[in-house]
Length: 86
Image (cartoon, rainbow, N blue to C red; front, side):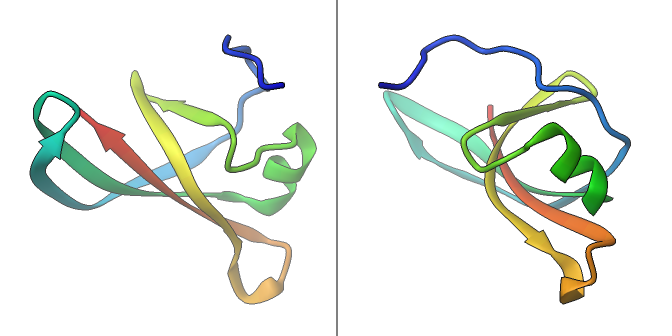
C-alpha cells in the first residue's frame, strides 16, 4: 500500500534545463505542462535512492519524475526527465 505523504530523501547538486512548454487540457481546465531535464551526478542519485516514484523540488518548483537515465552507462551523469504542471 502506498503512502500518501511526502518526506525528504536528501539533497544533491543539479542543473535544470527546460525542454518545452505546452498548454493542454488538464483535470478541470487548461494547464501549462513543462518538460524539464535535470542533470546530476549518478552517485548522488544512487546514494539517496531516488526513483520514478519520487518528486523533485528545484528552486521552489515541484517536478514529477518521468525517467532516470544513466548517461552512456558510465555511472557518472544522471539525466532525469521531469514534468511540471502549472
